[in-house]
Image 1 (cartoon, chains in turn green, yellow, red):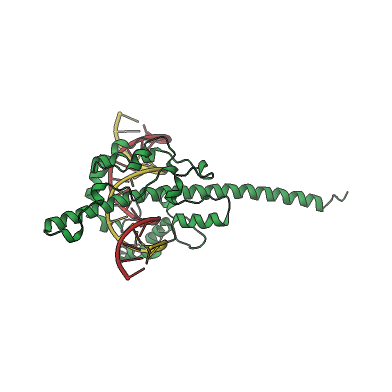
Image 2 (cartoon, protein in one colour; image 1 turned 45 degrees about the horizontal axis):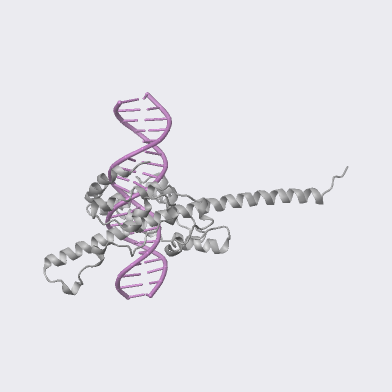
Length: 245
DNA sequence: GGCATGGTGCGTCAATTCCG
DNA sequence: CGGAATTGACGCACCATGCC
């Protein structure tokens, strides 16, 4: 799936959409894609959080006029935050040996984690994201260049320290005088924040995929285990209850 | 071929959680 | 406690597929 050519559309359109429409975004909960809905919430066993679909159902059943007004607030209240994927998975892995940990970034470059080797993620995801920096800032982080290669994506690092030098090396707030400089500083900070969050979102999605795959693999392991136990039980039953004739 | 629909990934905002 | 990190939600663009 090639998505390289659509970045320009997105960047311009999204820029128009943001800020002006963000207020109304919270009131529109129904148009979300099915995939996002289904993967939006994985029950951890610790915290029971309703899925977005469930929340949407709640909103639909209560179709009074004022419900629209308080819908976003209600939804925010219902959708209480749960621990991060990394934390959940690490806790899972401490309980179950078969579950790979989502490692910290620095440990990933030392080699492929044995269990994660089965969880290849399409590299095209990261290949498509390389162009945006050239379009926007001409300051592509070094790790993004690596992402275009043949290395598996779980080895791709997204260090927050690899920020463009021109952005990082900014004047200290104390040296600013004119309103124009302040505005420039604000703009610079905003772009820096957006860039960091962009990378964070990518990383978060990668972790989420990894998390889902880990859960799926765990299901597979448990199913096999369950099957074996049932067979064992049947065998023991046969042994313990000899035929009467 | 054109259209509708479903799936996927992206950038962004904002709320929440984490951590020094 | 404040800043950084994380992630749900949203809208968008694009692609694949099925139907007409």
